[in-house]
Length: 355
Image 1 (cartoon, rainbow, N blue to C red):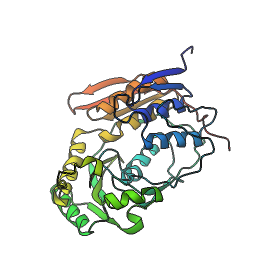
Image 2: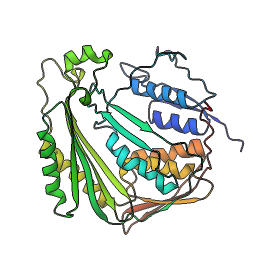
Image 3: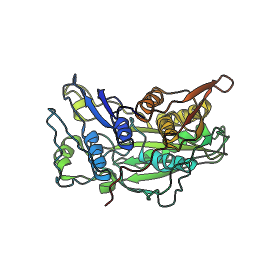
């Protein structure tokens, strides 16, 4: 097509999404000035972890990290996997298991062989969580989707979790959330998942010294999912955790955390807001929905979402730059939703390693 298969980008904005799209499209990408104005410029540990993952699952590439002082030796020993499974910034592992994976079936991907097990949970700042994800080999391509009917909510499910705190906090969260939901729908079930000891965040050797200073990352929260009559899943996550020592001054007192009751009300209200906005996915999954549509074969995909989020808009720009796919956007003033249509780029799974 004569298009330049290289990109020069700047800053850390949407770093992970850019890397994924560059890998899927076999595009050479140079990203400069990554947090150049911060006290600690360069990549964060979780971004380096993504680079390691891309290095393992793809081939015919070179990863070069410049003067930030970080290096990726080709034969470096593996570090035990451990991280944050539930926080206030990203979708939780519960949302990934109950909502994200199920989006694939709307694009012709069978869910048989996909499995995500939570071996241990990790709350900020130390984390220590561990999950096992099994993904089947997808031999066929995606299929274009006509996914515009969000249906009506028929049930609400969820999980209230806690790590290294009293398990009674989970019941208080559930009681408060049900107090909101039962005004609208009777089919509400939220189960509990209390983790303590090693299941509440493994203490890897590299974190032992920090655990003596910061404790072992107590936290609690809830993940809620609304299922509709047409199979749509809308999810929200709310988490409370103690800040790291870097976020607390020596003279300041320990910050007051959100109570379990307030957290339950907040989570329930957020889920009702997602339902009220309309659309076949919640606001968190807009970006993934658009990417799946763009990766489909050269056929028309049509989806409906609520109000476009800033992340969703930036995803549309990245799709245009990497996949050369443009969406037709049509707002619906009657429902305050947005319908998007595109012709897929027909991306093949060619970047994976043979062995």
